[in-house]
Every structure is written in structure tokens, then in C-alpha cells.
Image (cartoon, rainbow, N blue to C red):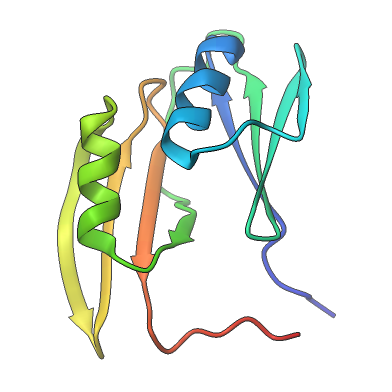
Length: 121
């Protein structure tokens, strides 16, 4: 029934600034860029940005973790570009490492280095 994660959407106060910031951290422009929605294709998964209309409740109840080859390098990259440290890099066992930051718009953005995870064709 479930095919896997397809889209993570972050609500932002300024969609143009968010588009530019995410383009900077990802290293590429969005494939869909409109005032009401900006979409990035990140390794076959969607990262969407939507205007938040003053949404200030940025709960940590749900966190999307984005796969990376090197969690330490990814964390440094995010922090250098203006993200705020949320949870320090942790080795959670089995050579799996995770960390979270807050983007400039208050959203929690997670990274995970998991050498055991392989995408199914």
C-alpha cells in the first residue's frame, strides 16, 4: 500500500528567501518555482516550500531526515549557510549518524547518514 516518502513540505514566511536559501544548501535550483509553491527534486524525493502566512508553531513532532553520505560534512554545510543547530550529530548505532538544524524560517531539517539504507529500484 505505501510506496515510501515522496514529499516533505516546509512552511516559510518568505518563499523567495527560502527558495534562495534551499537552492544554496542543495546546490541546485527548484524544478517548480511559483509564488504559492517551490519544489525541489532531491534524489527522487520532493522538498516543497509553501508560504506560511505567519505560521510560528514549528513543532518537532515530525521531522524529515534527508539522506547524506557524510552527516558531519552536511551539518557543517548547513550551519555555514545560516541554519541553527537543533540537535548535535549523534551516532545512534550501526554506523548510523543523525543531526537536525533549524532553517532560517524555523523548520526542523534533519540529515541522516545510513550506510544500510539502499533505495529499491
